[in-house]
Image (cartoon, rainbow, N blue to C red; front, side, top):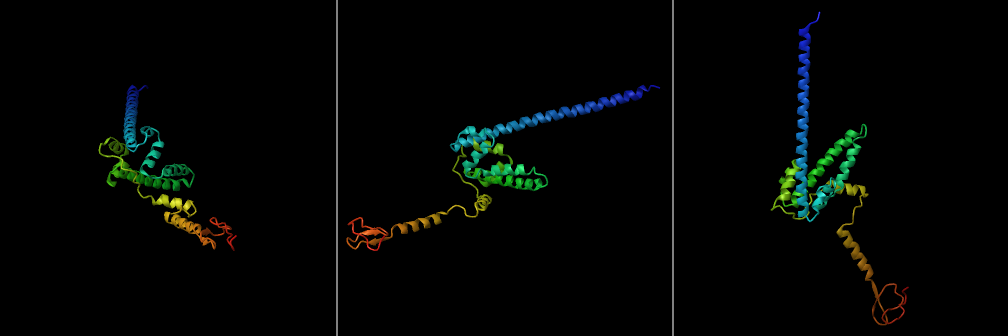
Length: 228
């Protein structure tokens, strides 16, 4: 026997479920559009801010438009090594390795956080701001870059990089522990070379100072006996 009430309730149920899922899908689409607009807005604000920051530091503003290159430019402006960008990128690739990926993922996160802190503290100091301002740069960089860029009072005061002991350790480690010559070492070497250069002997004929191992005196032409 045909039960019209049952099929009617079932149809109404299907309609309700369809309307519910349709509404959820529509809300999801609206949410996605809103988030895209917000992200684009933040990106535009950050580009404007960095453009102004670059021009304050006598750099071409258009460099702010190019991804990665803008970060390299910012690193150079504030005096820190841009190699951290490559380090973080390589660690992200290594994190895809099976089994070992989780270890590299943790190292990547630590390196990324470290780089963000080093960069933004250096940015704050190089534009005459305190380390407290760097907290805003870290948490909400587009807005705070925009503030630094358009501010009439916040000018570029020169590169003032934050100390980077990890990078110094990496350089020392991968350079075989030798590192670059220090100024003191260079001074010592130069002094020794200078002492070596001024060693002279007296000419028995004219008394002129003649460099060691010179065969003839350049003043009188007398042979320097015992000198070859």
